[in-house]
Amino acid sequence: MTAAPQIRRRQLLLSIYIPALSMSLSGGLILPVMPLFALSFGVSYSMIGVLLAAEGVGNLLADMPAGTLVQRLGRRRSMLFGVVIMGLMALAMAQATLLWEAAAYRFVSGIGMALWNIARHAYITQMVAVGIRGRTNAGLGGLGRVGGFAAPVVGGFVASSAGLQAPFIIYAILCVAGFISAWIWIPQDEPSSGAPNEAALVRLWQVLQSQGRVLLAAGSGSLMAQTIRAARNVVIPLFAADHLGLDASDVGLIISLSYAVDTLMFWPAGVIMDRFGRKWAYVPSFILQSTAMACVPMADGFTSLLVVAMGMGLANGLSSGTMLTLGADLAPPDARGEFLGIWRFIGDSGHAAAPLIVGHAADILGLAGTPILVAFIGLGGASILGLWVPETLRRDPATTKAGNR
Image (cartoon, rainbow, N blue to C red; front, side, top):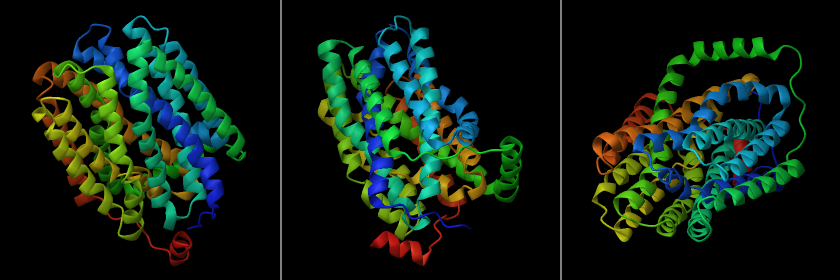
C-alpha cells in the first residue's frame, strides 16, 4: 500500500485545524439554541425531532453523491461550496417563521455539511501517514469539542439577550471565516478526469466483496455509536428546558462545561489509538457514555444535570476522532472519496436518526424514559465494535518514529 505523504505540522495546523476550528465554533454556537428554537414553534416532541433531524437527513442523503463530487471537483472546491451553502442557510434560518420552512433550510445546510466533511476527510486520509493518523483525527475531534465548549455559552447568552434568531447570524459570519481560511490554506488539487463514476463503483464493489463482513459490523456499530453521540445534544437541552425548566443561558452553560471536559480527552484518545489500538479508545468510551446517559433521568436540577453532562463529555472525549480514524484505516487508497462517502453515510445515519428517536421516544416514554432507550443503543454499538470489528491499527515503524518526533 502506498504510504501517505508526510505533511508538515505547520501545514497541518493551517490547512486542517484552523478551518475546522472556525466551523466547530459555528456549530457549537447553536447547540443550545436549536432545541429551544424548535420548542418556540409550539409543536410536539416528534415534530421537534423532525426539525432537529433535518440537517442530519440532508447530510445523510448527500453523503454518497458528495463522495463522487469530491472526486470530480477536488477537495478544495468541495469544501468551499460546502461552507457557502451552510452560511446561506444559517441566514435563512434567522428569517424562518414556520417549522417546515426552518426544516427545509436545515436540510439544505446538511448537504453543504456533507461536502465540507467528506472533502476534509479525504484530504486527511490522503496527506497523513497511518502512524500519526489517530492523533491527527483526535486533534480534529478535539477542535470540534473546543467549539462545543466555547461557543454554546455564547450562543445561550446571545439567544437570551437578543433572541433565538441572533446566533444564526453569528453562525453565518463564522462560515465566512471558514471560507476564507480554507481558500487561503487548503492547496488546490486536480479533480479526477476520465470516467470515474463507473470505476469508483467497481472499486467500491471490490472492497465490499473483500471486506463485506467487516464493513457491515463496523458500519452498524458506528451507526449505533453515532446515535448516542448525537442524542446527547438533543436529550440534555430538552431535558433541561422542558423537564427542569432551565433557560437558554443555563442550557448553554451546561453544554459548554460538558464540552470543556470533553476537550481534555482528545489528546489521550489519539495517543491510545496510535499506541495501543483504535478499539482501546472507542469501546470504553461508548460504554461510559451509555452509563452516563442512563443517569440523566436522576437529575433533578441544574447541578445534578451538569454533573451527568460532564460525565458524558468525559466519556465522549475518549472517542475523539475514532470513527474518522476507523473509516480512514478501512478506506482503499484508490477509491477514498467514494468509500468515505459510504462510511459517512453510515455514521451520519446515526446523527440523523438520533433526534427522531429522541422525539418519538419522548412522546411515548416521556423525557425521563428516553435516555434509557438511548443508553441501550449505545451499549449495542460498543458490543458490536468491540466483539465483531478487528483492530485496524497497522504499525509502521517509519511512520511511528515520525509521529513521535
